[in-house]
Length: 390
Image 1 (tube, rainbow, N blue to C red):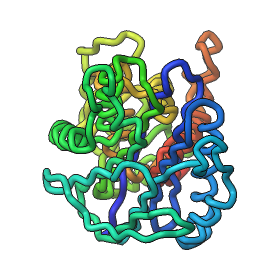
Image 2: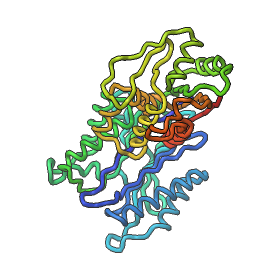
Image 3: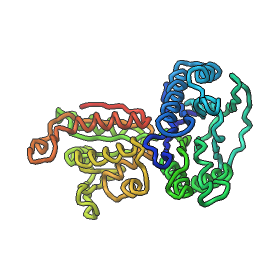
């Protein structure tokens, strides 16, 4: 079984602090995905530096095949000791999931990971050992499709202390709320947003500590194929459509000319939607056998804008309202965020005469540029991207 992961995280800064003292690092190697959540001591600039150093050192060493002992040893020796409390640096959680399904969880002084499987909280049998006088919890196991993991900083379980709840939101409360949320959504980004919002509300919208949740979902490989732009040579129309259609996964065509080519080669009719709510996004169409047919550059540009917000951790209620909107750009972005692990782009390089209009707000030979931006953005989100030009 080859597994993929859906990863998202959300951080709340301590009230009145510009920088967050927690740091999440996500690494993608040839055979695994690694999530590191580091929590720097205190808050503000110092905590941010400590958490950043910790996550970067751990990430670099893990990528180079170092054992956890040498990682912790290096952290213990590298980061400064707090002169007041006489304890070091930062706490951390690391989850590594290999593509073959084997997984490794290691935790140092962060709250335990919430592990949901088959709609139940898993009480995982971790092992404890001491490295450099630090108590480390470790767990090696095999993941299953739909497993869900939530790594967190201690700000999560302090939520509500002295505000709504006398003793805060306990780990058990957090776990039960996570379980409830997983019944409502299978998306890592939505789950991270829901858990973060609950903490924000419990803090009375003034977080008393840096608060971070990192959600990892184990999912099956999901392929999305996008065809945009006519080929340079018209004789390649059939070849492009043939290559595009024989790929597994969802099929999306972006662009009026591209849709006409697909319809002609497939001998199907284009039915344009007359029902569209957002005048700033051109209407979609439908062609039998395809999952989504949209206009080209304007829709791609809008979808890219939504993806960028997601990439920059800007997902909140307003973001999800935009993502769930009934228009081509939102549908395309949603497909790429929530239903895609592998993206195949089939790109025609013919210059579209419609793109020569200088009255347009941007240079529309930009289609190639948009494709490059889409590729870069998707890769930053952990998708595997392949581009084929015609």
